[in-house]
Image 1 (cartoon, rainbow, N blue to C red):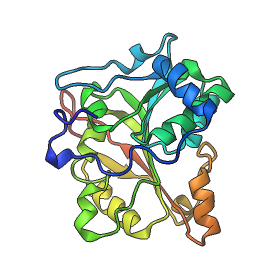
Image 2 (image 1 turned 90 degrees about the vertical axis):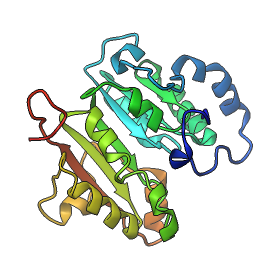
Image 3 (image 1 turned 90 degrees about the horizontal axis):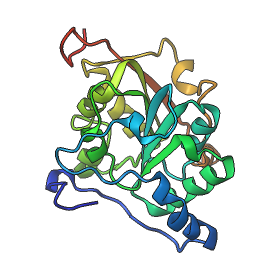
Image 4 (image 1 turned 60 degrees about the horizontal axis):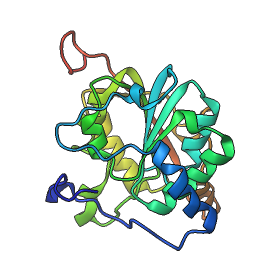
Length: 243
């Protein structure tokens, strides 16, 4: 992260590195990451997401905070004609994703920003992303930290701008405080529509939404994950505002 890019209101919280990495993951950071890495965008930069990939892609999807990368790698492996880009500042998580990418052989349709997602969102064109994921983000449970939650008034407009009309925004959490927060902010945002029609729609994942290790640990601990799907409403002609 470049401190000059993010002002104090956009400070990146949380760890950048955890336990020492094993040899293979260190080698992947040195050898594989440079070919997949998206440089941190600077103010005024513009990034064509399709241009990040050597081969033509049917669509480009974005995962914000991909953790150890299991969901992102699964989506890339099961959608070879979709470019999947992810942002994650925790270097151990980046190394975990790189191992999965190498194991699955999905180097062609994965790109990684090992940093904060907000500069990337600001650099992407309007209506350029076909699906976005924010899964099991840090809940920041203390009230004085709620403004650090990613889904909220600062970042929903960013997501609404870059998502195509009809694109999905998928959210998940096992923290009920965060679930209520995300629902409150996203439901009342004019550009998003909640797809749920009954309890089963938020209690169960759909077929193309694989479980993650974090989710499995949450269930083992007795916490029930909630799965939320929103659709980006159609824009008014000639504007970025939903109909």
